[in-house]
Length: 599
Image 1: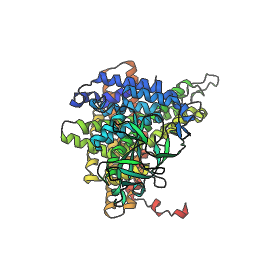
Image 2: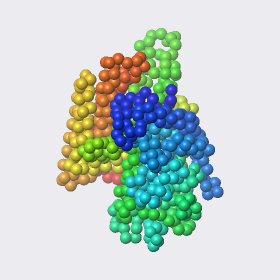
Image 3: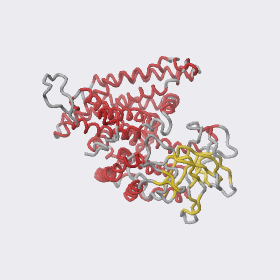
Image 4: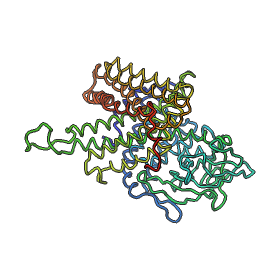
């Protein structure tokens, strides 16, 4: 059995919970059916198990380094990316005429999940490139698409996103990188960019940097940011990489995890002219970049889920094999030790992991379905509704798995005992890899502010209303399956979420902005827990129906596990979630009243 993901669970979520096979009835995906979807997922599983997971540990220990001005990496990284290139995964969701498979985004998400769970570092090169290509498809000129996007779809050019700078972090309004018109429609780029994943390497013919910078006439703040495509090598008239574009690698950042992908400080225009092209309209670069950032945020959350998922599968296998201790009610000290999975506390930790990672995977695939509905639903109303759901769920999809997927990894270490803290087992590496995700693509605090201060309030609460309708629908499914008590608990919790939003809205209206938003992160966790609990209600309702109609012995065990995980989520997790809402609902001033000198 794969230690990347449970194939039965993936199929259950894709087809039984979300009906992804029905997407093939839409004109865009008419060339596909479940057989072709399964074939692609089979291929993704094979690549994950045979070409990505085997070198994850070595890439962690033998991280990239610089020699003679060039990055050196273990050869397995390049070999694995070549396999992904040959299999067509760089352009999987793009149109056939653009070299893609024209897969639904949901199926692409499923494949990406497997790659991330197997080796999040190597997979980063692929997924950054796909996101950059998607941005150029949405905002680039036809010439930019031909010269830059097409080679990225072929896997010949890789992509990056260059936002942050030294001492700037997430405060993009303060970036200092400049773009000066050269008089021929191009721009001279000068400045520094920090924390650039995949920013320097020898894995591709070219690196296409998407760079945020300010024009000379830029207004202050984020409204003065423009976006530029800046290649490592300038392209000749035939689109071939040629002259160096003077982007200097100033150094590699050495990280706690994610060690297999380069993370760079880059200098633009320091040792010669660095030339870039404007993408989209002047001063509207951040709006365009959000196209890539939001895709990356959903991807970060999915990666956090899958790192937790892999840790769960490793700890489950260990708990079934490791024998230690005797039953709590046992009286015979000479009886043989039992598998630790039979100890209640170990079983609790495994069940808690299952709730987090299988719930997180449901959340990530649900986002994929929203993307597909937004693009291909038959009615304008359905497309608008999908966009509203995606808007309000994106900060949850990024931040909730980043927190609770990491908690799953912590529990996996605990299940392994002392061995979990060593390199003898992969769970310590998975934890270190996952620790980056609460920081990646906007910290938890930024996601909380986005949810509470913007998404849940925007359009008069329209997005929240649409989400509330979906949660009620899931509760009704649970009612029909006989889980009325559990559905009632979720409804009561969601009512508390609504009341908390009303309280925050009132304080915002009174001008008490800091007080209203001071506890946005814990609000996000409480909000997210109730969303995931509703997804668990749906999973349990579908599992119950399958049990009632009859199924195989293996499926019987699988479905009963789904029902039990839902019960754990509702009975054990929603109590703390209600408490996380309280500081925002009550307007607790403790944090605001704390002076920095007291800390």
